[in-house]
Amino acid sequence: AQKITQTQPGMFVQEKEAVTLDCTYDTSDPSYGLFWYKQPSSGEMIFLIYQGSYDQQNATEGRYSLNFQKARKSANLVISASQLGDSAMYFCARGGKLIFGQGTELSVKP
Amino acid sequence: GAVVSQHPSRVICKSGTSVKIECRSLDFQATTMFWYRQFPKQSLMLMATSNEGSKATYEQGVEKDKFLINHASLTLSTLTVTSAHPEDSSFYICSAIPLIGDYGYTFGSGTRLTVV
Image (tube, rainbow over all chains, first blue to last red; front, side):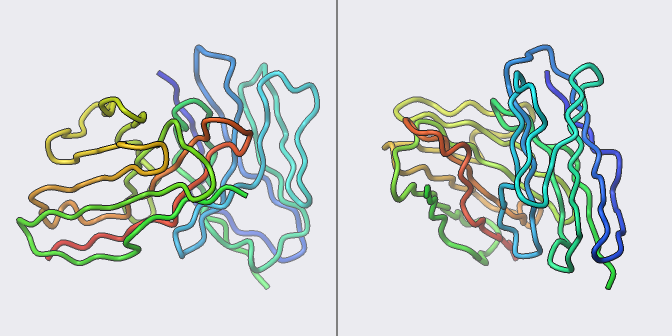
């Protein structure tokens, strides 16, 4: 069985600063990639970034980047230049059946 | 882009009644749909995986007779909460994988169910 772990229930960051959200995975199947989603209070799931398990380079999408360390089985999300609108729940998920981690509630302070 | 329409967005029902939630892929055919349940401030918990034309596969601990899933076509999957009780009150959300194309997982907007 695969398990996704996010150890930070809540995080605070000052506006315009960078923040790293942690995610580790434990699975015997190396073929699936990792996703990060943002969930604002409305409940919608917003896709942020994807890292393929065989990708050689860390994924980047605008202000979002992944610090992917395969040996450590971690795929941490880095948000640069935080904005007030970034305040939300953030979930890491593994492909296949798309199993989610516990989530991190990010609060951006003005 | 790929869109999954989920209805209703909110529903209030009386205890003992059944509620049907629909997820419809608007511009693609979905070979697989996932149904999740989410309590406040918690993660999305996978309830079941449905494939068009076959029986849904339920995760351990999910009552298949209570949460009926039907995936009768490549564009529609439904979740029916039967004999609902207040403890079934939750946020339910679906996700679909396209038959072809690289859209990845596309989520519906979710349904907030309140059982009174």
